[in-house]
Each structure stands twice: as C-alpha cells, then as structure tokens.
Image (cartoon, rainbow, N blue to C red; front, side, top):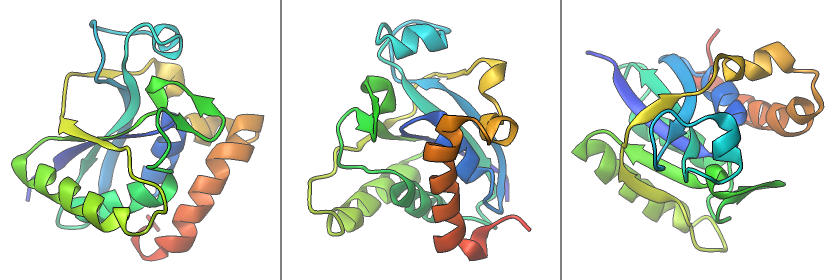
Length: 176
C-alpha cells in the first residue's frame, strides 16, 4: 500500500515533530505552516500573527503499519484540544489545534475521533477539522529541533514531557 499524508497542528511543531518521529510506520515528519494567508510565510511572520498560519507537521505514513486513527489517537493524547489558540504558555493562532484532512476517509475519521475524544474532556474541543490547505515547509533550523536541542530549556520543559508521554502510552507503536 502506498504512503499517505496527514497534516496536524497541536501547538509548537517542535513538540509534534518529536512525538511523531518516534512512531513506527511514520516515514517522514516535516514541520511547516498551513491555513493562513500568503505564500511562503516566515517563522517570524507566523509568530507575530501576521499570516494566520498554524504551526503543523506533515506526516508521510504507511497505513499498513500505523493507521490514520492511531495517528489521531496520539495527536489527541499529546496536546490539549480544548484550549483555543494556545498550548500551555504558547499563545497565538499559530498554536491552534487543527486536523487538516487529505481525503474524505480522513475527514470522516477525524470527525469520528472528535466525537470520541469529546467524551474524555470536561471542556468542549476546539480542534478545527478542515481540508488540507497549501503546506509550506518551515525553515531548515526547525527540522529535528528536539533531537538537536534536547538540552535547551524549552525542549526539556515542554517537548520532552510530550515525548515521554508518547513512550508511556504508545510503547507498542514506537520505532525500535
């Protein structure tokens, strides 16, 4: 079976990249921007709220090894889908919770998962589910950020706990 794409935004893309790089069946994880106005946004413009883009990761995955549903389960476990335009201390529309679907089947699965996840949270989910817009790769220095900067304060305080949570809850899905 051919690889498929998934595009997800759940806060800082350094976190989501680090989490999904661990998952068996995920062939590539690329941080980038989607869902805003204007072509080729810069990190600075996105962070300043000038473009409306979200920080996202685009995953290429093998559905014979990891299903889209499983990717969504991980996604909804590693971030808070009830906080509008923020994750922890990261605040702004670029940190919004969003599922950009690439196929009608992904759309249906995202809506199904939203219904299931809504039962697990005390507050309403604010995750957007919308058709995948144009994806713009992030600048090179954002790629493999956690792997290259694990000792950096943000990485140790914010990214590392999400990586550990993934290892705890999804141990059977990790790359060896």
